[in-house]
Image (cartoon, rainbow, N blue to C red):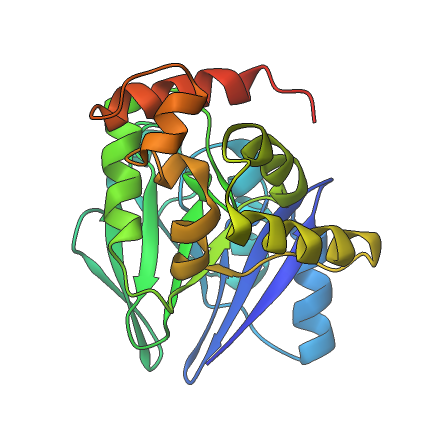
Amino acid sequence: MQISLIPCLSDNYAYLIEAAGAVAVVDPSEPEPVLRILRDKGLHLTHILNTHHHFDHTGGNLPLKEQFGATIIGPAADSHRIPGLDQGVGEDDVVTLGDTRWTVMNIPAHTSGHIAFWGREQAAVFTGDTLFAMGCGRLFEGTPAQMWASLQKLVALPPDTRVYCGHEYTLSNGRFALTVDIGNADLHARMTDVESARLQGRPTIPSSIALERATNPFLRATEPALATAVGLAAGDPVAVFAELRRRKDSFKG
């Protein structure tokens, strides 16, 4: 099983999954970059996986389906908003791609029907726009409590799980993290790596659950230092998370 990053638009990532008996793309925002990698590798696309309905994650659905006849799988809760959807899935459903199996997790808040695809044996999870490297998605269709609950499901995955998210936002996310978690040595070390990678034009993805636990402020809302940094008392992680998200919404970095 192989996973390849496919840069799309200005800062999106789609992902190509090559498994014995199947070839899938996750969240194709546009068809052309996907077609190029398929052509270069001599592959035939069999499946398209969508984490949520936003056009920058589904824009390639119909052109790719028309060319390859690929089966489109996405959140059942958003079946009316996923172009070309063939199979709607939800919590604990299993998607089989050749010789690999991917468990569906409902992780709403960025959108009401957002899902993730987790491969236990592959040690990989596709989180769309819910969990980013050192960040999380905006709350377009949910509440802070919903997003906190969704993030807690993801952070409970095995620490070596690789995190494949929807955008290259890591540098900006890290700059924000440094404003609220300044004493975090792990965060400072990670930012050195991130800055070097971006200067060289290299992606910062995948991350890992272990790395996110250590450096992502939105997962660290239980830490007293984070509560103090946003002027709140410790003990209410949802309130701390909500204030972190509010501040990130207006952060210019």
